[in-house]
Length: 340
View 1 (cartoon, rainbow, N blue to C red):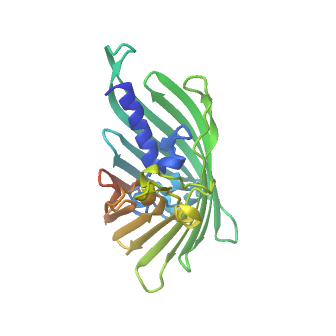
View 2: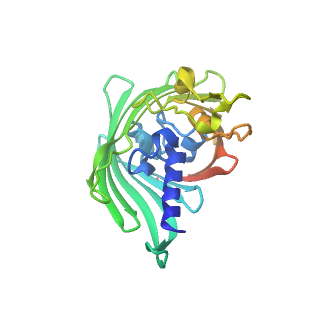
């Protein structure tokens, strides 16, 4: 693949990870890719995960808790074209007060590309990849159900011969009520900067603010999830010229998403069946993904996602499938291991 093809893949990854209006504005876009099968199955956003899965802390550091002690999570995503990415997360409690610390790695490999000079002569093959290493800690506010957390990330990126280093901070708050089985979470991710730039131009990091709510229904093994994503920017909708309508007289009615359509693009819905059992099923719907990636006059089921998890002894295997359109989808695989 040529350098032009390489640039196309980068734009494609940014577009599918954050969609067109938000993607492409910032560097280190891989930081906001889905990091676990549960997150992928529930529509791509999950900030209320107060459980024993250490991957939850990659989405909201306030999720770090004692149940994560000595838990290891490994996740892999078979993404678009030859792009692959994944994450590894681990948490451990120390000392008599059981202070829990968390560490995680997120990486993406864009594959191999054929290089060419300005005259079209083939040069050497090159690759591209990015990685982020994070360290986090949370604190339970005494006499309350609130938990606050933070994590610091060190970022390294290499795109052909261009390299960049950066750092970021994630902040989070979770309200966890085990009696009512209601959770609320707020996550502010990627507050940071580039330490070194690719070619002298400093770029912003993809700041993301998400607010989520989750509740397990009383007497019914169903847990619903409602998430408002990208609260850092209101106008996430945009005009798509491909959806303009031309009448018989040549008048053009331009595509206009409108207020309601823009508001819905902040909404992600998810539901888990049998959430507290050894086997559960998950379904999700992402409104923004559905609107931005659907094909006009075709039923592509864009925005839908689903998955399941199965616990066997000290192992829990999870899988999810996310639909983008008739030409693109992704599968996410995850394995959680209890090392105690």
